[in-house]
Length: 320
Image (cartoon, rainbow, N blue to C red; front, side, top):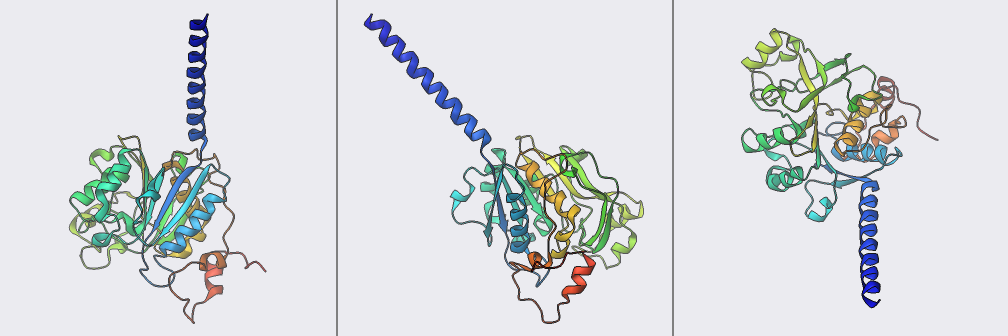
């Protein structure tokens, strides 16, 4: 009799442990996806490369969306406290690139996160990194990057009339907008694992500058002459199970006022965090000029024409 009672007790304890474990797994599955924005240091002056202001704006939109996500913003640069990455589902880097890219001294750490399936998003200049090991890593993480003496960074109006069917384009209408759209990016052979999201055919006028590391080269001139489509934003599904997204726009801070420009990036971040993107895309209220002016690194110039910006970007009046 005692043996039966003991066996029954052991079974009950085991069952309780299994149920507790199941509950823990379920709780973890239902926990909000953690999104960490890494905002780069001050860069180009008022209204451009506004890393902190842009990250803060996007993070607020995500936190107000009603989706099971939680976004945090770290500024400036790479966190000294590695615990900030604990439990992270997606890392968004919006920063200056090239030799000064924030990830240059942390390639191994980011690669470890990627191998765990963490999503990685790079916005604007953050898609540029030196060729070689850094470039190879970014190619692995997000599926493409800006390579000097191959890619170019002109200002021009991108016209996105044919959007692919993808969760990142949910609820995004065709749009056109002037930005410093990089193109002729370096992608893997055969575009393996990469889905173009924003594509356009630039004119030869975008190559009006002399050849240089960022302005032109024989390869890009030949491609544009042949009217080869250029991918300005793309999604990546990695072999490690993680996802990546590269977005070459984002030079001009005021472009975040455009609902389609903004929704596309919000959708991409949610997708990279492996949360479901709603059929209509991430729900997001229209932005005011006051919201766009907040958290910028530089003091607003005295000659800044608020009404001109409001008119150009169809912004509503400031709340009273």
